[in-house]
Image (cartoon, rainbow, N blue to C red; front, side, top):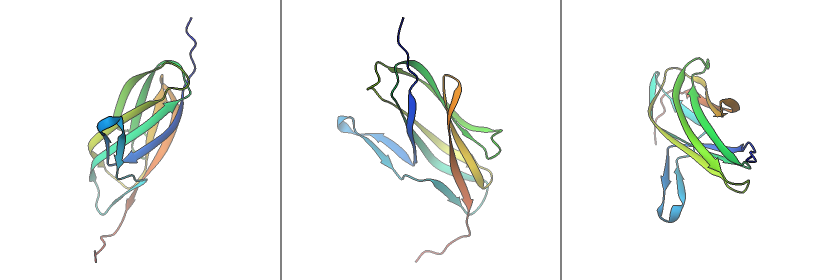
Length: 135
């Protein structure tokens, strides 16, 4: 019998891009918490998510969903498998989403599921702004 311990979600970072560098380092570009738009619907050209799971042991499935403000529509969904040999290992789950259509301002939701169970719900504010002049 294999000893299984459910991992915990350590963090999720929202950014424009995630790159694997030479030597294995990961670079994150354009970290953000909110999206600002002057008109709706708007296409957000590139949205990358990096989540780290830790403190677990065993084989698990991970699903990440980007939901509309009413949480009824799934805008994007990714699924992956992870295997953690011991509680020291970590798993980084990275997804990149191109041309995400945001129909209205409001609070969108990034949800994380572990083996089908909701473990995290992260708000992503999409804010309507007036056009601004640049100096």
